[in-house]
Length: 571
Image (tube, rainbow, N blue to C red; front, side, top):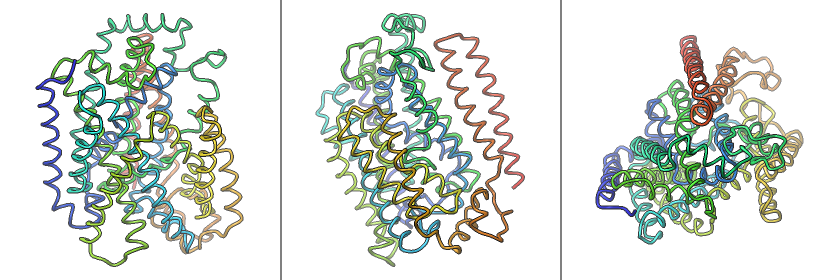
């Protein structure tokens, strides 16, 4: 089935709305850089959380999920569930720190945390590293994902599709800045999530219901491993080897570029009304993105394995399922949901990339003391340039999942140092520089010399080499100046454990990150795993176990919310 008139009407309505939002907020976004990139730090927690979840619901994620599930079975969900640990850590360990720092970009923190020329160099280097290299790479695989979907669900040339929808996102992002990003995210997420649930329901119906789904997948995989949440640790033909599971559970969640929150999420934390809204918004996102959003993708991916078992490119199973099971109108809704997901990710990374370039490179080092209007103009021009660079890069990307895993590996060696800089006074600018360079060099070498090396082995090698390098460099170089350490600690007030020896005779009662934050992090992680395991039991194992698990989940969730409220009252 191809798109019908009603489908085009649904898509057109959404596009008109997106442009209307962009033009509505144009004047407001033009007042200052803080308005253009942080919407005047005025956003409530629920909008912050939805915006985070929306930008994570990119057009590439359902496609990558289809490949992970086709290759690794239900346990392929651990590629996401393990990242959920990082999202919970961002909630209870980092969100309040980032909001308290009051920075425009995460790179701006560098000159608050470190001192002297090394800090300045690192800020410039990371502006290029994240703002241009990593940011354009992410946009590149998102564009690649759009062309895959467009080639299946529309009769049009994928280049025209990319130019048209990318152009719409470009227009409202240039016009309205972060206001347009965050308010279009709200509508995009509602429609994208609704469409994914509808598609999951109709996909299950297409294979004959849940019982038939289980029966048919067991016929395809008679060893019974496909629907195991925890793959066999002894079987030689395990869909996920033991080393890979170890990496996902104990390494991946902190060994990546978003280990202490991530640029796009940090931007949203910084845009929150206050610390409370930053924390609650990040908490809302952690469960929406890593539990609610994920399960419809997994269900559709399993149905795709049943209906297209020989497909050499399982990433295309998702759009194929859309064409197969959705009637007119609903097909338009789901296509619009994916287009919205595409535009949500594009507008986020265009705005974020421009934020890095203008605040961390142009304004800080190249052209100082100009008017706010001048910098906003440069921001809009840089958004256009980033878009063009990303389109060029997308032509070199063949697989969304493969590009995704490479970028995770590329920055994995620096993940630990980005966490430690908050909690250990001895970390300095050279620690970050050495970790990032080592990680990039080793990951690139492995990609070229050993292109078939599994992701788990690659990330362990990168982390295993980068970690001793940055620790040695840390002790061989000068620590950050004492006054800068005090300034940083007084501004953000992290845990005092790793700072007492670095700031003698200091009153550490000012530390607002307490031991109960660690306890909430542990409880939040347990909740995340319990919720996902309960849903798996409800769908594929024993319904009663799933219901009991979800009941316990709700009780513990209320306990966690109560903890957060008491802490806010204590403060």
